[in-house]
Picture: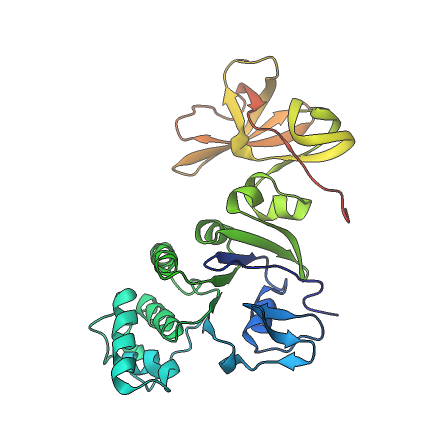
Amino acid sequence: MPVVNGLSFDVERGELFALLGPSGCGKTTALRLIGGFLRPDRGTISLDARVLAGDGTFIPPEKRGIGFVFQDYALFPHLTVSQNVAFGLRKEKPATKKERVDEVLKLVGMEGFEERLPHALSGGQQQRVALARALAPRPRLLLLDEPFSNLDAYFRNEMRDNIRRILKEEGVTAVLVTHDQEEALLFADRVAVMQSGRIDQVGTPEEIYMTPRTLFVAQFMGQTNLVLTQAHGKTADSVLGKLQLHREAEGMVLVAVRPEHFSIGPTADHADSMEATVMSRSFKGHDITYRVQVGPVDCLVHTHNREPYEPGDTVFIRALQPAVVLDKAGA
């Protein structure tokens, strides 16, 4: 059974592109195929109109002009920082090599660490050295395989933002592989959501989150309310009341509404408001998630942290955004 099958996408020059999906969906395999560490059984991989694999051609990794930042950074333990960074510049003259090493170490904020060995660096510092090594030969494409997963939450956010800034400043084209939805949304210009070796949807972070195309994408990208509705063009009747739809549909359709796209209040503020009972309240600091019951169904509602409702309270909810009509399986 193929690990990836029918996989097809394009990355624009200077774009930061993310392959997002659960473990085992084939995203790292796709990255290794692009990098030349695996040979595809069929299909074509091209970079700047040059065929790297397919049509009887297979260019080895070291001749593809592609940089790779591995999950474990893969620094050479016996080489200093500067020697690690210079590894891909072996054909350069000594003066040119030193100039480029100094340039990329300054770019990633690691000047002054040239003579350190990898074991004397923190995880974040090792990651920056790995990035500098990948950038030093000026690759036409940079591949990043879960590069932030070994860092704690604070440094993960800091390093993700720093690396995005560096890549944008340098105009580097990059493909990131991650299973972290927030990371993909914050890092990438466009995101491809993968499932079982295929891509379910490609779009900007806003498109992927706000208008998921399939049930899988809707659920994988975060909590959502799923409702069967009877659609009539751009509106639908449901147990949650009359809903606006993001596109025209007819008949019975499954729609998704994110919890933060509901309002909640003590009184009905609109003709479409529905009475509900608070079943539970989850305080998370910056916001609160309520589980409310509307007739026979439960519904999640996210709101700010100043709402005073408790389990048992009667409230009124209303969808503020159009519900997203999901494609039927196989459509």
